[in-house]
Image (cartoon, rainbow, N blue to C red):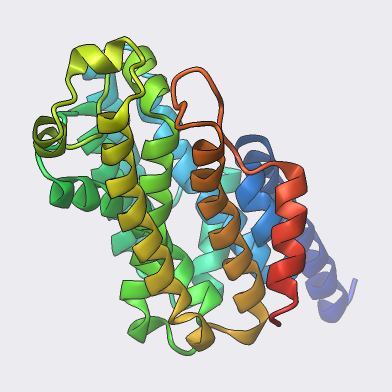
Amino acid sequence: MTRGGTYIEKEKTDTSSIQQDYLYCEDIIKEHSKSFYFAFSKLPREKAQAVYAIYAFCRLADDSIDEAETSEEQAQALTFLINELNRFEEGREADHPIWRALRDVFNRYDMSIQPFYDQLEGQAMDYKFEQPCTMAEVEDYSYYVAGSVGLMLLPIIATENHRELAEPAISLGVAMQLTNILRDIGEDYKKINRIYLPVELMKKLNYSVDDLAKDTINDEFIAIWESIAIRAEQRYLDFTNALHLFDKDSQFPVALSSRVYAGILDAVRQNNYDCFSKKNKTSFLKKMCILREVKSKF
C-alpha cells in the first residue's frame, strides 16, 4: 500500500475509534442527565461531543466517590482519580474511552486543567462532608462541584471570549448546584445524611434538624428554601446577562440548559415546596414550552 493509502487508512481507523469514545460518553449523559442532554445535544456535533466527554469525566468522579462504602475507600478512590488526572496532564492518560475523548477535547480547544482538579476537590468536600454554616460556604462548595464545570465548558462554548467570561460561567454552574440542593433536600438527608442548608439560616428562621427529619414544610422551611432560590435565580440572571458574549452557535443551547434547569425551581413551587416525597423536575411538556420560548429569541 502506498504511503498515502496507509495514512488514509490509519486516519479512518483513528477517527472511527475516537467517535466510539465519544459515543461512550454520550451514553453516559443520556442515562444520567436528560436535561443536560436535551439542551447540549443542540450544539454543533463537535462541541456537543466535547461537552459529553467533560460530563463523563465529572460523572466518573462523582460515581467513584459515591459508590465507595467507607471513608477509607472514598479517600482511595479520590487519590486514584487525582493520580489519573496527573497522568493525563503529563500526556500519559489511561487507555479508556473517557480519557481518550478528553484528550481529543484538549487537543481541539484552549482548555485549562485547573477546573478538573477543582472538581475533584469538590468530591473531597463531599466525602469529608460537614453541614455548611453560612450561605457563602454553600456557594463556595457549589463552585467546586459545579462552577468548576462551567469553567471546563467555557473554552468550548466561548472560544473567543472564554478568558473574559469566567464569572458568568461560574454563576451558571453555581446556580445549577443550588437548584440541585433545593430539589434534593429530602433525598440528601434521608439517603446520605447530608444537610446542605446553611446552619445560620436554619437557626435564624427556627427550622430544626428534627423538622427536616419529619418532612416539615412550614413557613420557616419555605422562607429558607426561597432565600436560596432567589440567590440561584440571581446567578442564572448574571449568566444570562453575559450570554451575548458566548459563541453564536452555542448561545441557544446554553440558554436552553439554563432555562430548563431553572425550571426545576418552578416545579418545586408548583408542588407546594415538597422536596421530600416528590421528584421535582422540569416536565417534558414544560421543556417543549421553554424550547419554543428560547428559540423565538434567536
